[in-house]
Each structure stands twice: as C-alpha cells, then as structure tokens.
Length: 193
Ligand code: GLN
Image (cartoon, rainbow, N blue to C red; front, side):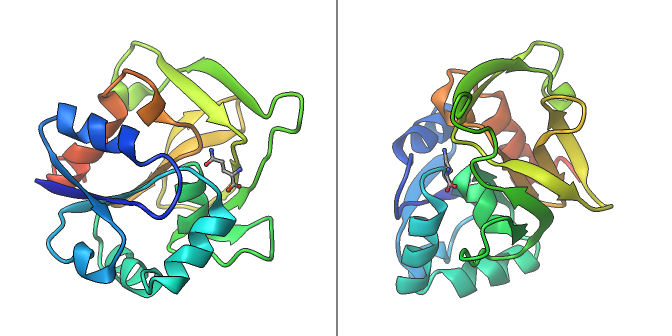
C-alpha cells in the first residue's frame, strides 16, 4: 500500500514515520504527477493559508479535489482538515471544499491555543488517545452522513469521517500511538465502510 503525504509545508516527516511503522510505503507529494499511483493521501498540519497558496501554485488543488470527489481516501490533520472543509471562518481562505463541515480556525484562544488532553475515541478502543492540539481549529458545523469520531466537550467535534475522508483537529502523528493512522489505513483497505 502506498500513501502520499502532501509535502508543501508543515509536519510531514512524522506522518511518514508512522506510516512506515505500520508497514505502509509512504512518499512525499509535491507535484500532481506524484498523486498518480497512490492508495491514499495525508494532508498534514501547518499553516492553512500557506498550504492553500502553495497547493494552488503547484497545481495540486484541482487534482486533489477531483480525487476526493471520486471517493479517494484522504486524511487531513489540523490545517489539513481546514483545507478539506467546505466552510471556514476565515473568509480569505479558499479551501478545497470537499468535506461538508464548517471549521473555525485558531478556535481555542490565546490562553489555551496549544494543549494536550486525553481523548475518548471509541473506534480506536477503550484506551484513551493523547490529543495534541496546536493552534487548533474546531468543527462548528457537521451535516448528516458524518461519523463524529471524537468530541472534546459535549459539543466540540474534533474528529470526523465522511466516507473515505477522515479529519481531526489534533496531531496524532506527534504521539507514539499508531491507532489513528492504522484506522486510516483500514479505510484505505476498504475495511471500514
Ligand atoms: N492554526 C493553523 C491554521 O489555521 C493550524 C495549526 C496546525 O495545523 N497545527 O492553519
């Protein structure tokens, strides 16, 4: 199985390490042609404004959007999730618009803009998952057809899935816990429907 990691800006190496530890082949994606023989794609965290600009400069926005619409598995973490969303609080940002959610950037304010907390994510089992939030967004609007995988407080959605599109506002790649990436690989394999 070959998974691409969009490598324009942000935390790429940690995703590649996790994928390799799970036995998947992982490759950096910077050009449209590098999307060709992949089974799935990860869009990492970073700065969504910068990644959006680079995606358009490198002609990657349209092909990635097309793949997402065709049901290709894509996992967006933090800024990567912002890029997948349909609606973003910051109107200057033009996301890909494939995941039918609304997100609010930098939603936790200055005091709490980066923090760690144990999360309950039932699809990953009983054991808590360490959520690392770095100037994280929250998902403010979720439509039907979604699986909400994790909430922080009762109404703050921080991980969702719509078909083969998976998104979370925290950084599983910065933990030592492979379960979230493993879940994405099971989506890629078609083991989760
Ligand atoms: N605050 C960043 C943004 O809005 C996201 C931060 C992250 O990816 N850790 O793009």
